[in-house]
View 1 (cartoon, rainbow, N blue to C red):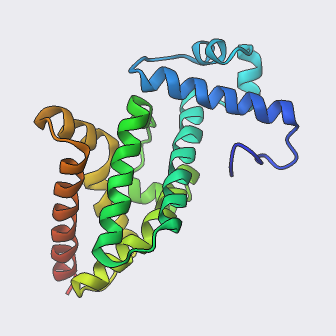
View 2: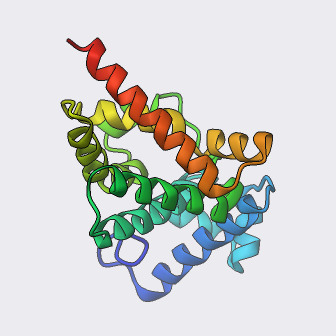
Length: 200
Protein backbone atom coordinates (compact mmCIF):
# COMPACT_ATOMS: atom_id res chain seq x y z
CA UNK A 1 0.00 0.00 0.00
CA UNK A 2 1.38 3.42 -0.93
CA UNK A 3 0.22 6.91 -0.24
CA UNK A 4 -0.27 7.48 -3.94
CA UNK A 5 -2.66 4.64 -4.66
CA UNK A 6 -4.09 3.32 -1.41
CA UNK A 7 -6.81 2.65 -0.60
CA UNK A 8 -7.69 1.72 -4.17
CA UNK A 9 -9.93 4.27 -5.84
CA UNK A 10 -9.10 7.06 -3.41
CA UNK A 11 -9.99 10.49 -4.80
CA UNK A 12 -7.21 12.92 -5.66
CA UNK A 13 -8.11 15.27 -2.80
CA UNK A 14 -8.12 12.37 -0.33
CA UNK A 15 -4.73 11.19 -1.57
CA UNK A 16 -3.45 14.72 -1.09
CA UNK A 17 -4.80 14.86 2.47
CA UNK A 18 -3.15 11.55 3.36
CA UNK A 19 0.14 12.79 1.95
CA UNK A 20 -0.16 16.06 3.86
CA UNK A 21 -0.81 14.23 7.12
CA UNK A 22 2.13 11.87 6.67
CA UNK A 23 4.47 14.74 5.78
CA UNK A 24 3.27 16.82 8.74
CA UNK A 25 3.79 13.95 11.17
CA UNK A 26 7.26 13.40 9.76
CA UNK A 27 8.17 17.05 10.31
CA UNK A 28 6.77 17.23 13.83
CA UNK A 29 8.20 13.98 15.14
CA UNK A 30 11.37 14.34 13.09
CA UNK A 31 12.11 17.54 15.01
CA UNK A 32 11.77 15.64 18.29
CA UNK A 33 8.29 16.86 19.13
CA UNK A 34 5.44 14.83 20.54
CA UNK A 35 2.20 15.46 18.66
CA UNK A 36 -1.47 14.56 18.93
CA UNK A 37 -3.77 13.90 15.99
CA UNK A 38 -5.01 17.47 16.34
CA UNK A 39 -1.43 18.78 16.17
CA UNK A 40 -0.69 16.75 13.05
CA UNK A 41 -3.94 17.84 11.37
CA UNK A 42 -3.22 21.48 12.15
CA UNK A 43 0.31 21.22 10.74
CA UNK A 44 -1.15 19.58 7.63
CA UNK A 45 -3.71 22.37 7.24
CA UNK A 46 -6.74 20.10 7.48
CA UNK A 47 -9.37 19.43 10.14
CA UNK A 48 -8.92 16.83 12.87
CA UNK A 49 -12.13 15.13 11.72
CA UNK A 50 -10.69 14.76 8.22
CA UNK A 51 -7.48 13.36 9.68
CA UNK A 52 -9.44 10.67 11.52
CA UNK A 53 -11.16 9.69 8.29
CA UNK A 54 -7.75 8.65 6.96
CA UNK A 55 -5.92 7.32 10.03
CA UNK A 56 -7.13 5.89 13.33
CA UNK A 57 -4.20 7.29 15.31
CA UNK A 58 -0.91 9.15 15.14
CA UNK A 59 0.85 5.77 15.29
CA UNK A 60 -0.97 4.80 12.08
CA UNK A 61 0.28 7.97 10.39
CA UNK A 62 3.82 7.26 11.53
CA UNK A 63 3.54 3.70 10.23
CA UNK A 64 2.66 5.18 6.82
CA UNK A 65 5.68 7.48 7.15
CA UNK A 66 7.93 4.52 7.95
CA UNK A 67 6.52 2.72 4.93
CA UNK A 68 7.59 5.57 2.66
CA UNK A 69 11.11 5.46 4.13
CA UNK A 70 11.18 1.69 3.62
CA UNK A 71 10.07 2.14 0.03
CA UNK A 72 12.96 4.55 -0.53
CA UNK A 73 15.34 1.91 0.82
CA UNK A 74 13.78 -0.70 -1.48
CA UNK A 75 14.27 1.51 -4.54
CA UNK A 76 17.89 2.05 -3.50
CA UNK A 77 18.46 -1.70 -3.18
CA UNK A 78 16.93 -2.41 -6.57
CA UNK A 79 19.26 0.13 -8.18
CA UNK A 80 22.43 -1.45 -6.76
CA UNK A 81 24.68 -3.45 -9.04
CA UNK A 82 27.08 -4.57 -6.31
CA UNK A 83 26.79 -7.98 -4.66
CA UNK A 84 27.94 -9.92 -1.62
CA UNK A 85 29.14 -7.98 1.39
CA UNK A 86 29.52 -4.79 -0.65
CA UNK A 87 25.78 -4.78 -1.34
CA UNK A 88 25.00 -5.25 2.35
CA UNK A 89 27.37 -2.42 3.27
CA UNK A 90 25.79 -0.05 0.73
CA UNK A 91 22.20 -0.79 1.77
CA UNK A 92 22.97 -0.58 5.48
CA UNK A 93 24.73 2.73 5.04
CA UNK A 94 21.73 4.03 3.09
CA UNK A 95 19.47 2.93 5.96
CA UNK A 96 21.57 4.78 8.54
CA UNK A 97 21.48 7.87 6.32
CA UNK A 98 17.68 7.61 6.09
CA UNK A 99 17.36 7.23 9.86
CA UNK A 100 19.46 10.34 10.46
CA UNK A 101 17.66 12.26 7.70
CA UNK A 102 14.19 11.53 9.07
CA UNK A 103 15.08 11.95 12.72
CA UNK A 104 12.84 11.06 15.63
CA UNK A 105 9.92 10.23 13.35
CA UNK A 106 11.65 6.87 12.86
CA UNK A 107 11.46 5.83 16.51
CA UNK A 108 7.85 6.48 17.51
CA UNK A 109 6.09 3.45 16.05
CA UNK A 110 5.09 1.34 19.06
CA UNK A 111 3.89 -2.24 19.26
CA UNK A 112 3.47 -4.87 21.94
CA UNK A 113 4.78 -7.42 19.43
CA UNK A 114 8.42 -7.99 18.61
CA UNK A 115 9.99 -7.21 15.25
CA UNK A 116 9.93 -10.77 13.91
CA UNK A 117 6.30 -11.29 14.91
CA UNK A 118 5.31 -8.07 13.15
CA UNK A 119 7.21 -9.01 9.99
CA UNK A 120 5.62 -12.46 9.94
CA UNK A 121 2.26 -10.87 10.69
CA UNK A 122 2.57 -8.69 7.58
CA UNK A 123 3.02 -5.22 9.14
CA UNK A 124 3.15 -3.30 5.86
CA UNK A 125 5.65 -0.69 6.99
CA UNK A 126 8.07 -3.50 7.88
CA UNK A 127 7.44 -5.85 4.97
CA UNK A 128 8.67 -3.24 2.49
CA UNK A 129 11.82 -2.89 4.60
CA UNK A 130 12.17 -6.67 4.68
CA UNK A 131 11.93 -6.78 0.89
CA UNK A 132 14.69 -4.18 0.64
CA UNK A 133 16.97 -6.25 2.88
CA UNK A 134 16.34 -9.76 1.58
CA UNK A 135 18.85 -9.75 -1.28
CA UNK A 136 21.62 -7.94 0.66
CA UNK A 137 21.29 -10.32 3.61
CA UNK A 138 21.10 -13.41 1.42
CA UNK A 139 24.15 -12.37 -0.59
CA UNK A 140 26.08 -11.53 2.57
CA UNK A 141 25.40 -15.01 3.93
CA UNK A 142 26.56 -16.52 0.65
CA UNK A 143 29.78 -14.48 0.84
CA UNK A 144 30.31 -15.64 4.43
CA UNK A 145 29.78 -19.26 3.39
CA UNK A 146 26.83 -19.81 5.70
CA UNK A 147 23.20 -20.80 5.07
CA UNK A 148 20.76 -17.92 4.69
CA UNK A 149 18.41 -18.11 7.72
CA UNK A 150 15.54 -16.19 6.10
CA UNK A 151 13.66 -13.81 8.36
CA UNK A 152 15.94 -14.75 11.25
CA UNK A 153 18.55 -12.66 9.42
CA UNK A 154 16.09 -9.76 9.50
CA UNK A 155 15.69 -10.28 13.23
CA UNK A 156 19.45 -9.97 13.71
CA UNK A 157 19.65 -6.96 11.38
CA UNK A 158 16.95 -5.16 13.34
CA UNK A 159 18.78 -5.77 16.60
CA UNK A 160 21.65 -3.63 15.36
CA UNK A 161 19.94 -1.26 12.93
CA UNK A 162 16.80 -0.36 14.88
CA UNK A 163 16.58 3.44 14.62
CA UNK A 164 16.79 3.85 18.40
CA UNK A 165 20.07 1.95 18.46
CA UNK A 166 21.43 3.87 15.47
CA UNK A 167 20.71 7.18 17.16
CA UNK A 168 22.14 5.94 20.46
CA UNK A 169 25.36 4.86 18.79
CA UNK A 170 25.84 8.08 16.83
CA UNK A 171 24.93 10.39 19.72
CA UNK A 172 26.63 8.52 22.53
CA UNK A 173 29.89 7.77 20.73
CA UNK A 174 29.95 10.72 18.34
CA UNK A 175 30.35 8.47 15.31
CA UNK A 176 29.72 9.59 11.74
CA UNK A 177 27.14 7.83 9.58
CA UNK A 178 29.95 5.98 7.80
CA UNK A 179 31.63 4.90 11.04
CA UNK A 180 28.39 3.78 12.66
CA UNK A 181 27.28 1.85 9.60
CA UNK A 182 30.67 0.16 9.17
CA UNK A 183 30.78 -0.98 12.80
CA UNK A 184 27.21 -2.22 12.72
CA UNK A 185 27.76 -4.20 9.51
CA UNK A 186 30.89 -5.86 10.93
CA UNK A 187 28.98 -6.79 14.07
CA UNK A 188 25.99 -8.01 12.08
CA UNK A 189 28.10 -10.31 9.90
CA UNK A 190 29.71 -11.77 13.02
CA UNK A 191 26.24 -12.30 14.50
CA UNK A 192 25.03 -14.00 11.32
CA UNK A 193 27.98 -16.39 11.46
CA UNK A 194 27.40 -17.08 15.13
CA UNK A 195 23.69 -17.63 14.55
CA UNK A 196 24.45 -20.09 11.78
CA UNK A 197 26.79 -22.05 14.04
CA UNK A 198 24.22 -22.20 16.82
CA UNK A 199 21.63 -23.75 14.47
CA UNK A 200 23.74 -26.83 13.74
